[in-house]
Picture 1 (cartoon, rainbow, N blue to C red):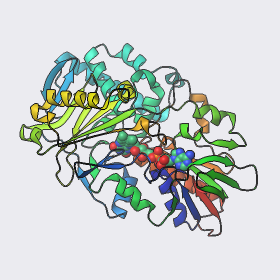
Picture 2: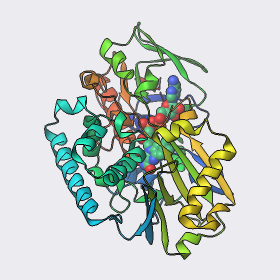
Picture 3: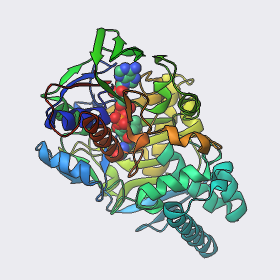
Picture 4: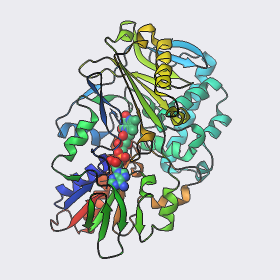
Length: 444
Ligand SMILES: Cc1cc2nc3c(=O)[nH]c(=O)nc-3n(C[C@H](O)[C@H](O)[C@H](O)COP(=O)(O)OP(=O)(O)OC[C@H]3O[C@@H](n4cnc5c(N)ncnc54)[C@H](O)[C@@H]3O)c2cc1C
């Protein structure tokens, strides 16, 4: 179930192996956390958008479906808004006094060393403390703590106090380290899809049997096969791949009930909170002023901002409201939210930033079939439940980016997880090609 990238990748792989596959999707569209929206006549990726250089599965898919990449714009001076002080800098090193820069470097080295350990010998004690605990005891400079907090909020949609140290390090290790999560060039924010990432999801879905509007409400595997009760009818399958974030798997009525460990696990994976805000302009005035469009802000409501000019050169800025700010965002009136965004943009880029020709926000916590974004993370003290993350339950297999080993939380991880679950299912059918067998991804 689920026509996000994980479910679509699983279905494509099983189809390739000759199995009969149906994809059941709750929403009226495919893509899940990958979506696009028109603002001022241009299309923007309001969900997952960037692809990093070591995300090889995504590169392969983009190219296989005849799509193209273009680089995230980063030329020019960047802005740091740290504890009420504005400063500008070139390159990747923020404009901080030397003593704070040294502290920042030391903190990154320490995190890097811990990330390397997390790949080989993770310490179970990391599961009992948060990233905020680690920062409080290892980072003396409030400015450096502020910068780390800003990066973590954007990467996870969570506050450092919510994030177990084990999750943070494991996540960094599944990528190419913390810096690769945060950087543009050589990092996770390097490239975008010219046609938009949703075009990729649509291309992956073409040729598959996908039923939208088929929210799976109940899964019954008490008999010789699996029955999926959906808003669009009942499907029967030999095997099912559930390609959803863990917390949504807990909303399904299971017969028999999920094993205890899995039941406990799904209660421990809350989603992050992120709102993407786009302001579209007549001209890229920040570029004319020598600015890259990138801002890092240790306060709120906007934590980071990027140039979001489209491949067709429609000028735009993209800002992220994340963590606690995002949770409160929907409680503010629409006009107030817009005012707050434009006030910040004017502070950084001048009066022209206050006159967009288009404005749009996407609040993922309002999406019932996601519940937040960009990814979910286990709470502290969840280690004992982790063996249930990928362990099949009867005829049910688990996919979704949260189950990935590499680039978990990212589109790359979603594809990896779907391909892994498809291989598990194919193995149960005794090999790569048994055309008579049937399987469902969310499917039936
Ligand atoms: C704002 C935002 C920014 C992001 N930025 C990036 C980025 O720049 N780069 C990157 O790599 N990643 C990014 N991500 C993360 C990336 O989008 C996700 O990791 C990836 O899309 C997850 O895919 P998935 O298939 O695992 O899950 P999902 O996309 O969540 O797919 C699950 C699917 O299951 C469906 N579903 C849920 N419940 C049911 C049910 N009961 N029955 C049937 N169907 C159901 C959902 O509707 C959905 O379609 C971002 C995400 C967001 C939202």
